[in-house]
Length: 143
Image (cartoon, rainbow, N blue to C red; front, side, top):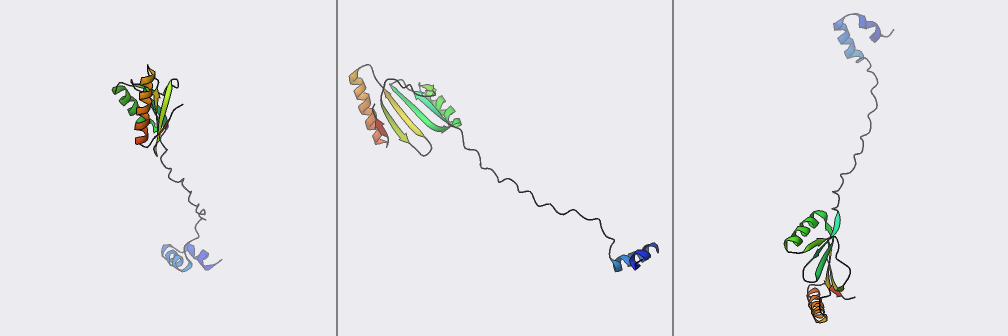
């Protein structure tokens, strides 16, 4: 028997001396440290849901706002109704005589002009709409 094992029965004081001389009794094997689990990278906030909203005004005009966040769409619908327009999902496709398209970094706006009661009135609407559109950097197209 080795000195460290045989001396363990002599009492507490000799045991402390032996521990100092021989070292502490062997500990049970510790499990190997587990590598840290890689946490998922912090996810970026989800982009807003983009929708289209249309507002049909009383004077032969309907504007479509495409690619706007849904929370802004709700505000736009409310503003349209407050100003006497009719909020729609899209502008009617029939009787369009011209469209002004203006693209912004966050959305595209299309303002459709509709046929009026008379040809003269329709020509006046198209002329005025084209001039206003182009003065604001938009592109006016007539079918």
